[in-house]
Image 1 (spheres, one colour):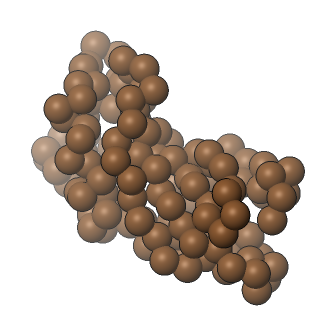
Image 2 (cartoon, one colour; image 1 turned 60 degrees about the horizontal axis):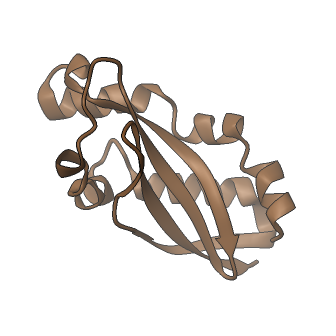
Length: 132
């Protein structure tokens, strides 16, 4: 799949329907009992398609008057990989449906937390893709 095709299919609107903004509040509600305790919002974003690997990002955007400290985000890949509200397996399944019959999503893994800036971190989702 070409980069142009990926950017056409994996639009901000399509990705927001797969991972709505409210899911971050649901996650913090389950974790802390109060959504307002969360330090960041979570956004699903397309990064790149490199050979047979589709790389998506879970972008962590610091909330106003909160701190997105590295020590709080480094352990998140392990938490996100198995948390039912984040539901990485469900995200990959929905991406597979969005990509249609031409490509199939296979195994996935989460990379390490990357710091883009003081207020934005990213957790890459690496997904094997194969021609359908």
